[in-house]
Image 1: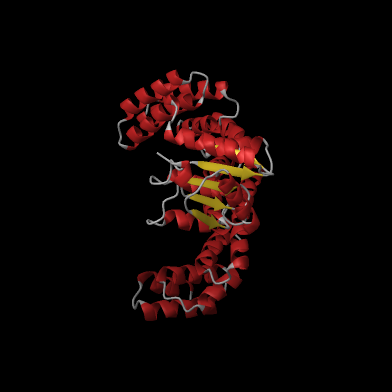
Image 2: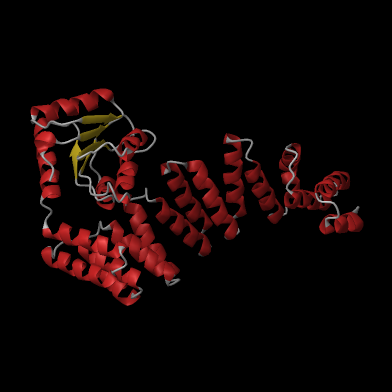
Length: 385
């Protein structure tokens, strides 16, 4: 049980004066205990990860540089130790995307700025009461989650049905049943429950996303695209969803639309350089080489000494028949004095295709020093040089 007169509160906002203002309002409300402050999401996450720190309530700003409030909340909900932590989100705007993201992150409550003592009092009391005395629907859903993690899907489904009985108007237990039947491998039942949830709540992004996963597994590209797009239109920040949708669009032969999706998730990503590598790999698999070249080139502009990316870029240029474009990167890789025989052989072959036989010869001699008698190097020397 959380005692409001003696609970520990984490306040997260990139503006120090806002943190102090929230603390002052909580003090007015006779909420005491320890207060922790963080001025960005990453700082807050480090505090929450400390074993000797116990936080009973988190009040988090929605829009912060670096790790946003939504990204921090997603980490909290994914952590077994922290996932039931009551969270109040503070936001300056209320729109469809914010509501959808709140639902996806299992937010407990959110407050619109400017914050007042009255609004803070109402939200904090509400989330603490719900944490101390969870309504039946939440009790059964948490039970279902715990049983699912233990691998007991049948009993988890029973808890999902009890949650639905507790609140027949909510789409949450309905889509949870769809998810559980999906985990069980009963696709017909999964589809039935998920479609029902989507019909009940036109903002249930979870249901849309799970339907996209279901149809993707069944290789029904048309339906998978439809449901992923519906989810993306409401809540675009889910990166995995965007990756899946982009890959599907490439498969359907719609590269322009796929690139639009990829660009959107790159704008929203916490680590866009790493994501660019992942997207480039998807593009190469689907032979969308031009966009892959653009992605790799951007990474090298930011981190010029990424020789692994240079090597991948060289491969793409070879696939497009633009070996000449690979030359600057080949020369840069050579400067590194690499001892990777596989890479050196690749460089030699490209030099041969470009009629740069003298360069190829030097590279193959280097291979011979590293690995005397290498059969492939000897064959290339005999055939071409």
